[in-house]
Length: 215
Image 1: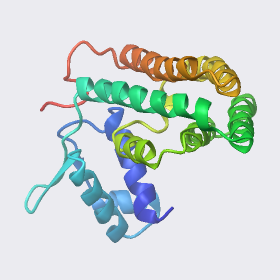
Image 2 (image 1 turned 90 degrees about the vertical axis):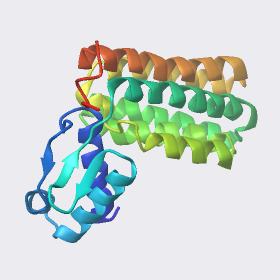
Image 3 (image 1 turned 60 degrees about the horizontal axis):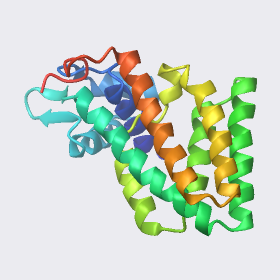
């Protein structure tokens, strides 16, 4: 991961989960010092966020956070639920024995990370990637990657109760894929993301859109 990618990933995470709110200003020098890099990769990272309409760059006012509405963030969970559900269903049909073993191994790694205090978010990413890859559909993987740009990557860091729930859901999903049960695998994955959206809504106390953006 380049310095630009690292900065963009972290800033996107902060915007999506509200620690950077609409109207906040970004200081390139302060961010460069925080991330231990020069201004150039930080500037490039903010350009990437501007392309996603998360920040606004202006010659005189600098870089201003636009944020994302809570409803848009939750809608994105629904999009991801449907796309990831499709991938899981296809994985149940198309996964090779090697794919199934990889899914099981990465699922076990999430459990190990949660028990040892390891990087649960990274282990979770690898688990979901293994399921998506087992769909053997480049199209659905491309759509998932596009949707993930507005999806909080380190979700478990801010919603701790997501971890024990995910472990139970992952185990059921692995069993469904192993059993080649396409409808069950698809529904389990969809519910996995929809339930996460419910937990995020509770965490953000979402009753309106003002928490994440004033758009």
